[in-house]
Image 1 (cartoon, rainbow, N blue to C red):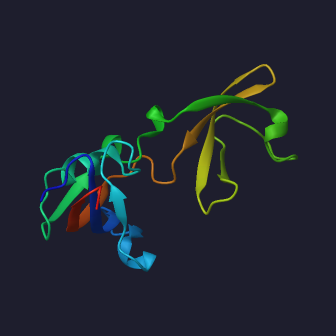
Image 2 (cartoon, rainbow, N blue to C red; image 1 turned 180 degrees about the horizontal axis):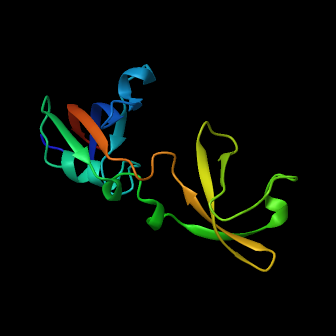
Length: 148
């Protein structure tokens, strides 16, 4: 059986930068991830396209450019924020970076001030790995019908 939309996929993987910085590994999760394969399965788009069609026990190693992984700075979403959305006493200027945590998760994000209009600041929300080329090692362990 091959990886395709509507299948339940068990996948071992390691994601690093091209310089070897470990981003994530299924080995660190305690269990091998199992997910319903498709466009909304939570994997970066380039990873989805590269594992589609793989068979059980098949392994691949490949690089994902930023555009197919976590995006580039230029493609990141933007929003206007008031001064009180930032820490008090901090000088706000174009190019300043801030980091925040998503409530209820272990996830974080970066914000970069890219403009100012009156008392509002235009920020880009950046994924922590935006702009990085990722090196992926993936092995399909099992492919099942979702009904099973």
